[in-house]
Image (cartoon, rainbow, N blue to C red; front, side, top):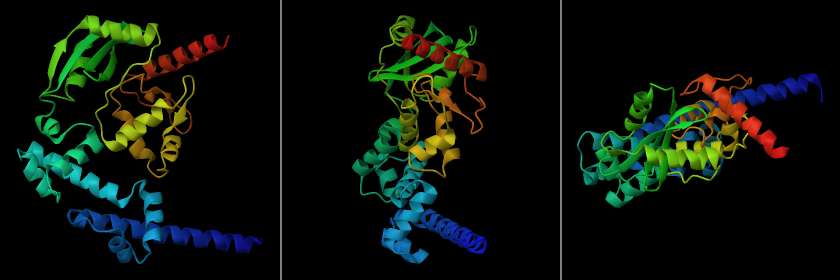
Length: 292
């Protein structure tokens, strides 16, 4: 193949990429304006001048999600805002174009793993045990629901209130009972016995998808935000992956400390870069002991 042909081919691909980008930008704008009407694939594709199959393939490649998931995200966000403003669950469902509370219930379970009622109450009716315990990475502040561990923070001695405030802010209307003995039992299970801890995750569908990808990173290994984005089928969403990683509520067990910058640098960690480094060294040492 000649150099001229190669350059022409590259120019054609770049031009096509630019056209696709413009089409997807217009499609997203259309969805932002018309999501309440739940436009069909055929309607959106027709506006873009593409077949439904061709449109779906390009849209998913550019956004990392289907148009339906984008519409659901708009509906979930709008319903959540309505509930926070005092709307009833029924009114919030109708406001976002759903047929009733059961559909809104399914939407909230998919995006947050809580019901609309729980979201409206901002945790009211949920009961958590929280407590502190020494761990290899400082004082661990544990938040436990009846279904399992919901959050784990690490702080220096004397900063326990900061860790608790961080966890409490996620569910400001929930009931919290302190029990350091329970927290110590969890610390022994995780850091001494090395047992599997049941996790009770409350997050959006996107966040939980990213968190599951984090759990699949082996101890002693590291990866990048871009690699995670590619693994979950959203190669253009590295920044959104970073945001979801930053919202990880269960430090260490959902190992966001194993995610590095693209160039291999240790980047910001909610509980301190030095603690992130210590976790990686700790895991590498344990992996070496297991192999010996």
